Amino acid sequence: SQKLEQSRRENRATFSFEFFPPKTAQGVQNLYDRMDRMHDFGPSFIDITWGAGGRLSHLTCEMVKVAQSVYGLETCMHLTCTDMGKPKIDAALKEAYKSGCTNILALRGDPPREKEKWEATAGGFRYAKDLVKYIRDTYGNHFDIGVAGYSEGCEDQEDSDLLIDHLKEKVDAGATFIVTQMFYDVDIFLNWVDKVRAKGITIPIIPGIMPIHTYAAFMRRATWTKCHVPPAWIEALEPIKNDDVEVREVGKGLVAEMCRRLINAGILHLHFYTMNLAQATRMVLEELGLTPDMETPLEKPLPWRPSLALG
Ligand code: FAD
Image (cartoon, rainbow, N blue to C red; front, side, top):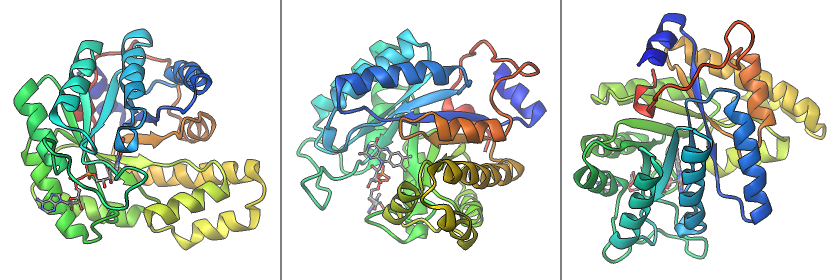
């Protein structure tokens, strides 16, 4: 596409935003307003997550429809296998199709809140690769299909080499792009990318970037995902932990520097976990010079697919 060519020429990174369905009607309206404003930053696409265990899943479909057809945002719908028999999967895919959505992030899913371990649903799918294959078999090439990648292990599998074997199975089943878990250690990530490439996986790898909103949230998420935080980050943030404004300012610099290293390594698409908030993500994008300005005004959106990402 034209945009891809332009990015390649300018070595200018593209980016996308992840949102999740809010719990209240007011929250949904606020998020629509924010999505509309964040449209002006120029994301290539946005994601809407699928609630654990199908919680708020009707809202995911609804938000995909609004983002895609009302706000004209290229949208990627997350879809999981948790508590989803085939009829529910079919209904969700049909909704996405009818909304004009052409991108699905196919996941196994987290266990429902009340359960500790994940269990397959009768008549449903066991692994994300089964869902990928089903979408491919049912819809041909209509959907770009993304899958999750774990550079630092995941909840029920810490062996990152075995996870790469499982990632390869998802790609062989028909996935066309990979979105990774959040991370802060670029060396670990790039080392993992090398291993993924060595396995013969060639589709784009899109890194998940979590901007820093507050020190408490930063530490909570890093602990929860068990991702390695470089000691220099703690040294920079811990002394100012009670000053949210300062934490966002210093955090912006740290996250932007990490993004620069990724861009220099040829990872030219950044996926931001916005946590439904605009400010910290905007600050990082501005620091990277990726928001539109007089010299690089917002382009008229061109058809874009996550599998066009460079990286
Ligand atoms: P899979 O790739 O199917 O792997 C699940 C487990 O099965 C792993 O332990 C894997 O090693 C193992 N496995 C896979 N294949 C085999 C095999 N052949 N033999 C034996 N074991 C195998 N969760 C949500 O509920 N909603 C969301 O919207 C959501 N969005 C996400 C977005 C991203 C970018 C990421 C990284 C995660 C997201 N998650 C979401 C979380 C995800 O659902 C969980 O991490 C889940 O535990 C694993 O999902 P998966 O798609 O990676 O599963």
